[in-house]
Length: 248
Image 1 (tube, rainbow, N blue to C red):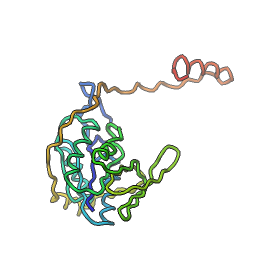
Image 2 (cartoon, rainbow, N blue to C red):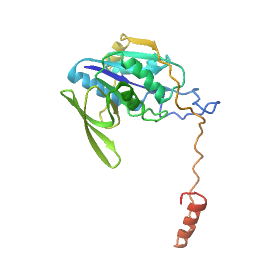
Image 3 (cartoon, rainbow, N blue to C red):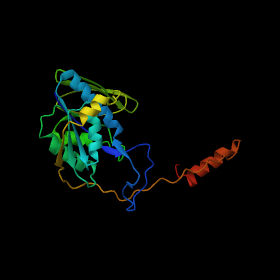
Image 4 (tube, rainbow, N blue to C red):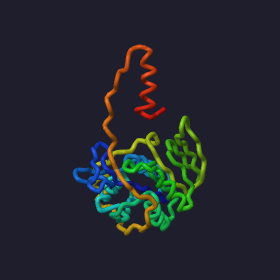
């Protein structure tokens, strides 16, 4: 089976980010980057699919030379080859999906895995957009996956329950926590990853449909107040919720 995984190179989630001087981007100084956490589930599921059906797993990432670090990690986990679509510009989800589509349609991929969202912008639409552009079926937010006889049966989380979806290949699957437990790269995998190829290509240039106008941090949370210990506090609480918090 011809399998692809699309991964993002994002700031570490444990790092406290600062807003850049332009007020529209993250200050890269002192920031360490790694593979997007949700994409690790996508890589693991791609490797499990390869183990069951055979074939090859190709990992694709859009970005700068630094993205090779993330691609190398997936190669150490067991992916067969990597593709870096080089681009140092800021792209929205639409432009990223267009660039990925341009690459994906050059190969006869039967299934493509994405993480459900990247933790930097959290739009959670890139996989779905790519499926639309490719004409693939798509199941998002998957927590259980079964593939048999060219058919997919997937469970996905929805508000208040689980939805079971059946569709056919070719398809795009967006993954999230609960689908699997991503493996650690073995020493053998790390060594072999250095010998695996990462092909470099220019990313398709497409105009963004959205623009980041401003980034700012949320104000510090105000300390709580005790209004009273008797029933009179209810009237005062309603008044403050209306006049100060503006929630009622």
